[in-house]
Image (tube, rainbow over all chains, first blue to last red; front, side, top):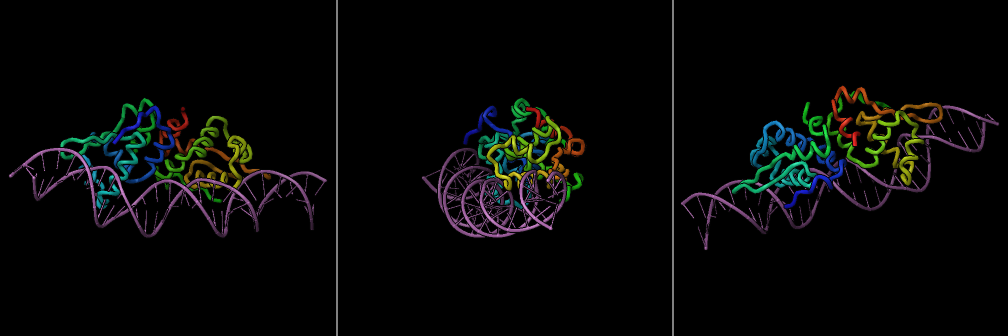
Length: 98
Length: 98
DNA sequence: ACAACGGTTCGACTTCCTTGGAATAGTGGC
DNA sequence: GCCACTATTCCAAGGAAGTCGAACCGTTGT
């Protein structure tokens, strides 16, 4: 499971990752609540099957939006806020702030 | 040909419209150069067939990003900058500024 | 009126995304 | 070691989006 260098990530890829309501909601939650386990994230999105949710996480991860790292038996999802702000200034704020 | 009220436009729809390289390039051109006829827009995107380009314009228009109005024999494409800034503050700047 | 021109729409094809069940992998507790 | 638990990957099916030629529409100039 690899996380791309944000310098290599193109803006359209990020915008696409954020253009799904489920994924955007997750990003917003991470932005306001801080890092969470996959399980906790999933609780905020009731009715979404595990595998589907995992696919969305993958899309966000491959777009460089989130980090997903093992933590014991769980996995912790983190918003790559500082890196995103450096690469695409203002984008995250604009997308989260509403 | 109708243009949606931006109040009714959801953010994911806008992000999706901007997540295509051709469409994003067009938005950036409109942001820096001001309104342009479809013909002029098309010249900046060589190799894209008329119908394909028109389809991209439609996506942007239905997302509330651009206005597309008849002007004599041509059509003028305008970025809905003020409305977008009011509805999604900072988004356009973040997306155009780079 | 009619021909030329600028654009859009239609229709068919292809490609990509999403979805979700089943199988798989990694970790901790007993 | 084995079972329970968390989470990802595999795979197939359905649906949405991109592409582009051909047909169509509105406008201008003659």
